[in-house]
Amino acid sequence: MNDAATRANDTFWIRANRHLLRYGGDFVPFVPERAEGVFLYDANGRRVLDFTSGQMSAILGHCHPEIVATVRDTVGRLDHLFSSMASAPVVDLAEALAGLVPSLPKVVLLSTGGEANEAAIRLAKLVTGKWEIVGFTQSWHGMTGAAAASTYKAGRRGVGPLMPGAFGIPAPNAYRPRFQGVDWRQELDDSFDLLDRQCTGNLAAFIAEPILSSGGVLDLPPGYLNALQAHCRARGMLLILDEAQTGIGRTGKMFAFERDGVVPDILTLSKTLGAGLPLSAVMTTTEIADEAEARDFLFYTTHVNDPLPAAVGLKVLEVVQRDRLADRAMTSGARLEAGLRGLQQRHPCVGDIRGRGLLLGLEFADTDRMAASAISDAVTDVALELGLSANIVRAGSSGGTMRIAPSLTVTDAEIDLGVELLDAAIARVVPA
Ligand SMILES: Cc1ncc(COP(=O)(O)O)c(C=O)c1O
Image 1 (spheres, helix red, strand yellow):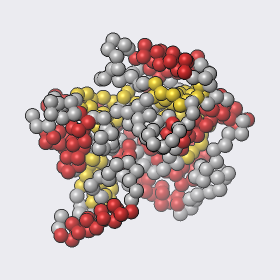
Image 2 (image 1 turned 120 degrees about the vertical axis):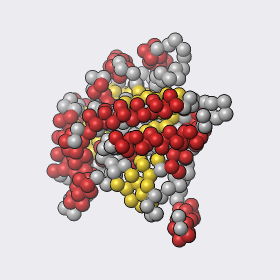
Image 3 (image 1 turned 30 degrees about the vertical axis):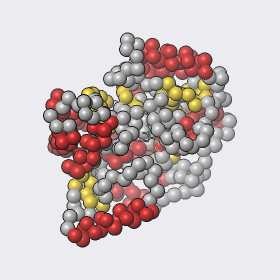
Image 4 (image 1 turned 180 degrees about the horizontal axis):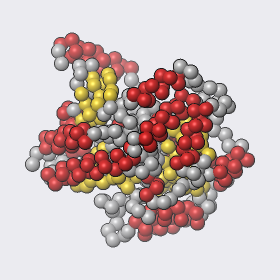
């Protein structure tokens, strides 16, 4: 950086520190000015490879030309409407989503993942007439009321009572099992036995991510969702799947639940649906929708069914399907996984590689000198210095697992570059 650039950078951080409320730890010491594809650029032209697709959302890469054109075109014609007005982009997107999951043909469009889960939980409570909600103890479903009450990964301290009737059960973790010799089925059965004892007979729903991303990329093993759904059905509970990160092709299928042949009662989509722009959706069955309408379901928000984000979502689906991006996630994911496994062979501190498609986790193991979480944080920082943004969670809360999820449009050369940079970062933090 030349002197003028250094001064501008210092001034920026003075102003940022003066005015920005910290909402989740420190800011990353890189200030993007422009983004294109999988790269971010600062004002000096320094380039950083984005291996987390922003906040796990930009599945088409940044500033995809067709998304840019859709936003430009739509905002000039039809931006925001009275919440009781339906418009063509909204009906088009609802129809397109229903076409992907025919048994969930009823759709409402919202803005964020937390908001979609809020609506899903409210829907489940209303139609079951019950109010107890169960989630995984490593989950992340959002920062608002009911979604936050079902989020166990972080954020439960110091904010007073969360929603009554919130229960958590552990998700299976094959790399670090809680008990030796206890398989996931036994653990699940036992968890429901404990739930049955603790609940007040008002279990309304279970909310789950098919791959617990914030929880450390814990992929529910094949068969788990089926067993979970059976437990729910036995108790009259609805199954809500939150595919904020796994939906729209990232795992190699349009939705992660397709691998298991389990269709939830309620599906929530967010992050990837807008490919980085604020759009989320709740999808459900006709029966649930009819019952909810009969009971005056209310989820009336300012941006419900807004046409502009809906037009974006429609374009995202079109591009993902036309360009067969779910298939690409599978092949690119295999290449990335092979690269990460190579790192595991070269660096004994890399303990486990896991995930599906282009949602992968790299978990460090403790060494004699460093704890896994310290390694993960240090590698994240060094990788950024080297030009790679490779972990969505920083400073202490990663739990030792880096989450890697580039956009589905990433090229082989970009994958190889990312693995190379990660290799160099690990070598610098934990020299052989
Ligand atoms: C699985 C999952 N659900 C919901 C959310 C919340 O989404 P939002 O931050 O858009 O409210 C997140 C955010 O990380 C998430 O990972």
